[in-house]
Length: 488
View 1 (tube, one colour):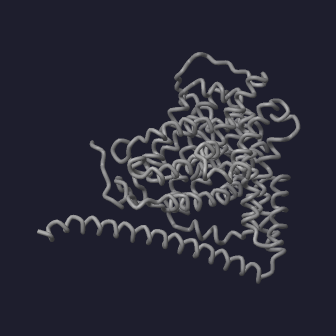
View 2: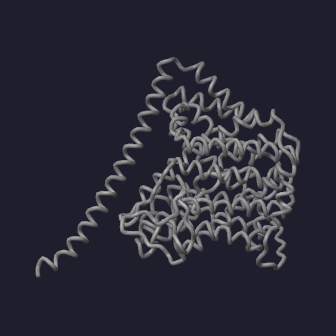
View 3: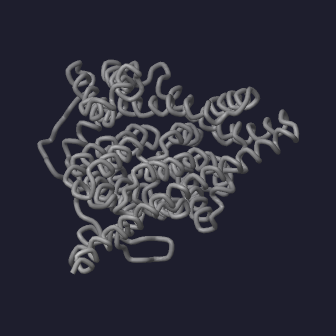
């Protein structure tokens, strides 16, 4: 079948399937060469959870590698089912999930508990997406509770990884090299303020995690902290059958009812953390809109696609980082190239996001990449979670609206750190109801509704403006075509 082209200002061709938009490579989108490199870079970040899989879940390294490959292959559901973004983990939730899992005996019990969390989260995503209640639930959640959950996730991420006797003490040089590079390139004012005027600094900043990983691998190797043992094998394919038999609930059994009950607050916390990414995905896409393509952003579809990914993982390869809607660094970089390159540089946004996710998967079968990542897995996880700690702290202070919100958020973070995400959520809601009077509760709800309405109206104004420009362009083309005949 030949490649299907879209009309100017139209939607990229697809096969309709209800709310989903099925697109296939070489038929509905093309391979974008620059994104091949970006996808291979993205493959490096996929190994950030190896240490958790091996230590917390107690998996054999080869099984952990297969799990990473399977989870990353599920990224392809995004372009297959109509999402234009580059997806990733719900990274801030991973630290909370780790602490929750460590409350169970090592081995099967932890895998069963993880399955319960991920399956409940999958149903939340799918139900909220199918009913359109996602925005309603977010509006009902008090800002103090949301801020506390996000802050607790961030602080917990840093605390868990930087404890005495952890990776920072055993692979110090590798950790410090990665942390220094990623924080300088990703957050430092000394470099960020010059990025707009320098293409080199843009590349350094947009791929800051990649450069941090390279610095970490080199520093850890030179210092002797990382024991690289390369087999000489270039390409290798994991044994997915053996993996499924060791981790799938169909083979290891299902959790007891009490575990499913304790897992529910963890699923809610994970959804609250992920919701911010749903908003970010849409805003990034609107900022990158071109007049020649109408990109459909539907939060309900985003929820459903995330739900499908979590559902498949829960049944066959439960994954502690869970499945979220956004991998921010790679999504931002791809959207920038889409916006700046025009139709000749990247015909459709799906060319870019599809190519990136396809070659992210391809990169995982390059075995030396896995061998290097396995040797540095503990240090890589420190870098990943410290980034999330910093970002979560920033988000928390944006969410809190007054001093009371800030105090409640701090207490929730403390509860999460001491007792886990489930207790933190329940304690936070109780503390909010105890300390807030009726007027504050009503004002918080009204303000949340107002902000949601403003956001929806701003989005609609942008879409209307894009439609107006496309119509003006179409009329201009028609006038050019009729001009010669009028002269005759």
